[in-house]
Image (cartoon, rainbow, N blue to C red):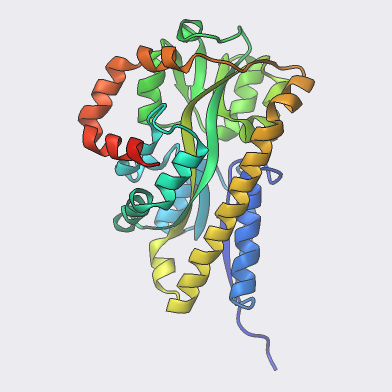
Length: 306
């Protein structure tokens, strides 16, 4: 008897397999296959093999790729509402961010993707972003003035970093290592799990634990592809994404716990105690703008989640 027909789908990340994002898609792929008894097979691609995050999201929207796992960096170009989560110092810590994303606010935001050609399966995590550079230690916002920093292709980040006097250089992730190596940019900002898996310690001397932006990740699926699944299979994909997110967050916690020690051992100079209040104060004019853009009540609702 012929084996049952198998549908193959692709999912991609722009960072290495041995990373918090690799764990997310590997777990997801395994769970989809297990839950659907092998009727669906997910092919996993790493390290920008199918393009950077923005290109992957575009491919999913067009339906040339079924799935992508991405940080929310380029997401506002497709779903502008999601920009709100990228505001600096909006989330107190990971527990706060996870509570918001897994609660009503986060679930309402996932629904915003439907009309843009996506089915957003689940929120996962990139982590809190920190600054690295090759020029000097960053203790206060003044130390950032004039530094040329690679930023994500994200309007909220760019506005905020300009508020610090940073010369912002938006660039897709797969190009960053070379740009740092060649000195095209002085630095970049990313969570510890990304800094570690991308081996930025080889091309950056200074790390400051600014924790300035919480960076979510998201499992995205082409909406038409999702809609074609049976009700049971839809649930299997959603559950598999939740499992992927759980494994991903556990790895972020692990990387965060050992990251500073590991990066110091590799020669990076780390500033651990950054006066965050100074950074927040510096952004006062930018915050006023964000209050207008997003509605102060919406931001207060996020801040109020315990």
